[in-house]
Image (cartoon, rainbow, N blue to C red):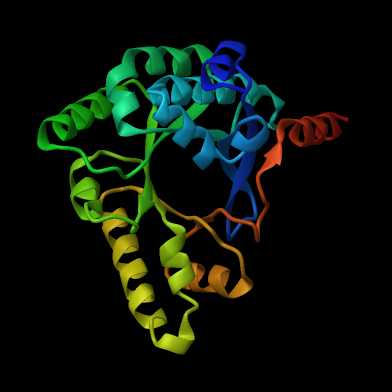
Length: 247
């Protein structure tokens, strides 16, 4: 299926992956993850294909709007937070439309911004727009913390309610054989300390083993996401869970 046809027919499905509080075992919220049809099932393949034909931002808007449509399938959707992804470029270009979509959805949406390098002018625009939407009650999460070369600047400049630690840091925690673990743990603790000073909550992504869970807990992180907790699951699964909880 061509990208233009996918966008026209809104042929994107949504998976939801829970984010859990380690201490209470309660679900903080869900991250919405888009999936395309056929060979474009992988979000990386879907977005890469859209980018090749110059329709990346339109595809991102479709994925975001489809996620907001499917929020109602989640159990306790009126009280849990839903994390939706958007790139800085798409957000700067379409922030008015995106803000309206979020407000119309009437849910507790967290706008998740990927850590993609911007020039100084666009960075200033992003900071200004994000400050404005946070004043309107929409929360912001910075994604991919620890994976790029401009992370510290973004943490310092971009206002956020959540910092999401990239899986590359989490994977590094258990590399005992090459001596990397102590260094990754020190970096993780430093990020937790910075987040506390900034009044931001930390979410560790990519938790796949009990040891990783223990290490992030010991580092002072309270919220986790990953296959150890739950893999991303389709809306049909969460709809069944919602019906069961009602019954």
